Length: 198
Image (tube, rainbow, N blue to C red; front, top):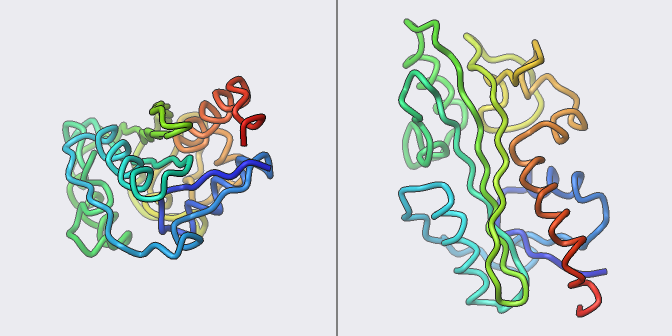
């Protein structure tokens, strides 16, 4: 079975993508490479950061790999936090502090439309390919649910009355931004015939 390196140190993301891939490939994270360095994320765009991270690991290990970058884009805040989603409340990357700041910044607004956007950058046989997944929804007025991670307790996807943190993981993975991007990645891989060469 062919291997893919997922350029992340976040165990939640690795497990989420493993569930979506469902044993089609062997998925490894950076910990499996014994890699713990900080990877630069200096781009001012979500696609730019995804490409930067994938390029960094590809150049270091010369293996097939993919990286993703995700942003929460809120209409009322002109697309913020966007590329700064993970560090919205500061470099400590604290999910609760990020959510509290976002809820504070929206407290006087009824315009709560938002979208999650994930961009995956894949290096396969030294060629770069990108895939995007978007899910639209709204920001809740308070946190609900104990599942998921990041902003999941305050994001309610369109067509549902529950936050991502309340939805069953199978449902979330089918409709989420990351799930949609990963499924585009899998569709590409299935048509590429690369497994015959690995």
